[in-house]
Length: 386
Image (cartoon, rainbow, N blue to C red; front, top):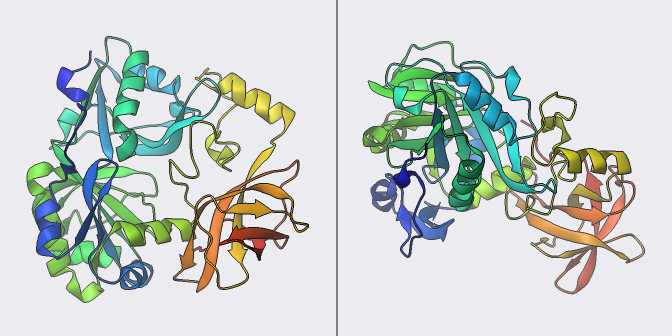
């Protein structure tokens, strides 16, 4: 069954996260993002970017959709979700998470998500046995899509009003947690695992995941503690160099790591194979899933569209929809995201090209930037690796 209040109603006003007052107090520049009022930046974007690469940064990700799933046992939930994603959820166990996508029948990506099988907890039992985190702008669509394929014996709840989600990312993230007071103090969960802790006396679930290319955790806590978790980390973790980070730096960080963004690199007409996410697709599993036939057909026929990472060889910044050409000036595709890389000090961009064979790293292409065809070099994914 689905709780009626679980599906978000259409909003005419921007939604605000529980951390909105904190952002206003810290002088953030607030903008619309995915229907939410979110901090674009708190200070200089370059300072925020470098803080995450060199120390650690704190991100408000309370806007991300939180969907919990409960049933008499975990087996029907696993089976129902397994029919919706190309990952093999049979490998999940309590405390384990996987990155995957929701696909349409053509193999296009409705959204990219993380699926958690939750461990037994003291303070988070209302989250049930499984949790999905989806993109904010796709939250309503995802809820309706899953609802239309979910058996009646499974309860799905939209949990954003009950919980807050904060990302702590960067090489000093463990120091920040310890300075605040983390119990138990060790060990932290392994990559793509989740476990319950107490942070400065407040209950939290720590997930070893992130969207920056750095190590870190995403912190799930009951909504009444979210503001205190945020302020406590910023105040007591000052010696680590921790800073609050806005959407602008989040985007340059994820681009350096070549992480895809839904609505740019990922759309309902792009498959995970084309997006270079074949490592997250388990076509050999016994379970059928929506889009499997289309992906098998695409795999057998060979890809015609390929994801590429480009380093622009002049001081010109590629932008969304800028055309990509081969070395002779023939059209190949377009840029989906581009920026100056603050870490590398170079213009970079990602996009898709239509060709039988993807160009090898070192190959030269051209990018149309403000009417000029600028030389660019294909580089291996990602641009930055910690």
